[in-house]
Length: 503
Image (cartoon, rainbow, N blue to C red; front, side, top):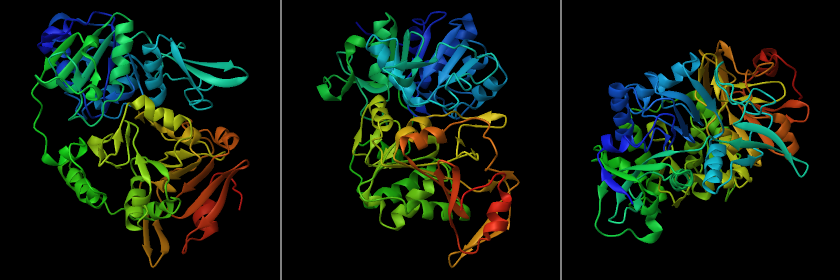
């Protein structure tokens, strides 16, 4: 039976050595009060300690002095297992300095492994991850030198087919944020941007005789409608009521509490960009890439669009009228709306449906998308892509590996080089005024996020769209299939590649 507790009381349910699973998505829907109560207790008692924390999509609020950053930095955590680390600035630095073990697994594979544990299974099989960095025959999931646990990902064969087997430690504590708890302890997510892995996490924790702690905005007397109660009260141990932080009215567009017609998506997105401090940059190279990439969209496509340069695809798909004829999706579970970026990445404007994250990755893993548009840090002569780790820095693979593993058409949106690249386009003619000092096409990528070998075996169409040309993946490597007006193929493309390409 659940109890209403203060955050300090609820955190006392966590013991030394517990494995905590946090339901959040990068920077949204974090149970901040619970994390900060844990930090306060750790500062006073040096307990709980020796913690393991798991989160499919990572957790943080883009502030190194809030949420979990403090107790991670002070030594309460021995091990992190996350799909993405982008919203945790302090933690990312400590990972690279070997302060604790840290593992990066594909977001969807963590989500499915949590669901497997909820069903009494030790782990989950997946073809996602084969021949990329997480594959133990390559690098494995460890991020730093002390992360050598080989139990998290194993290569296996079943009925003659290759798989990776993802196995998580037994989850003993759930930290979750919901909207409201009714008098029976049922938890609703009405004002939340997503519900993520919430139900699976709770089921897994209870299967392991652990504790479920839920932070909510309010208590309500009226029982929740059965279909709206994401977490039944019988799975909850502690409910902590925390008055929500004041939110800008524009963020209400992300909760699905009112209908937003397609024609209003753009204006709502501009409002959200304005309050997040995200100024749109009129990036010429990005516009060239986005305009060309958007031509790959077809009516009725189901689509995923990554952050960064790929976001320009949305802008040009709106301009050419195609955006209204496709269905956009986001990894957190939203489908049929317009994904926002920046600090609210994972939320959607005007979503038609928001379901459990594991279900979204069922769609992705099984080739349910028609096309995806992704960014890239490096591409090598074989067509392999590194999108998750640069020199001395990393954010994590996130949903990238799941999205690109089986989608029939994969479009990488990237500049030819970076840091100093200066490009203009007039009357469709592209002029390179200054080349960037960091090449993106390399002889061999430093870490593999996308396997060209697997893509060829799967029969996927793979394009690499830049501000000056387009390559296509073939069994022999890259083939130059298009150069833009104004571009000198020899000087601006071939001479700047460290490898030969088909023509």
